[in-house]
Image (spheres, rainbow, N blue to C red):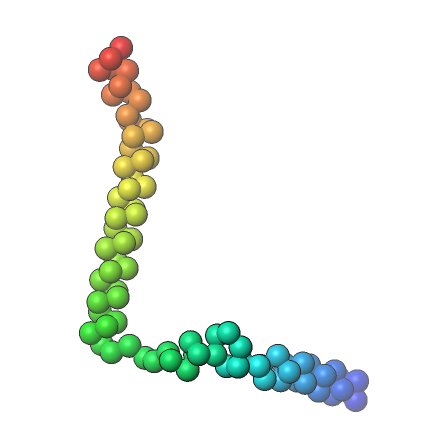
Length: 79
């Protein structure tokens, strides 16, 4: 039983050592400046992300369509 307790204390100490430096390194300023976005900012970011997803998805579909059906179209047109 004491072996389990000792191992758990060692684990606890390791976790505390790793988390002690949070906020003091190169990301510390970012964490201090970060804040929760307002509702308007959240909606605007969501809209931008949605537009990006649609554009990237459309581009992927266009590339797929060209590879799938474009070769037949080229062969019928020029062949």
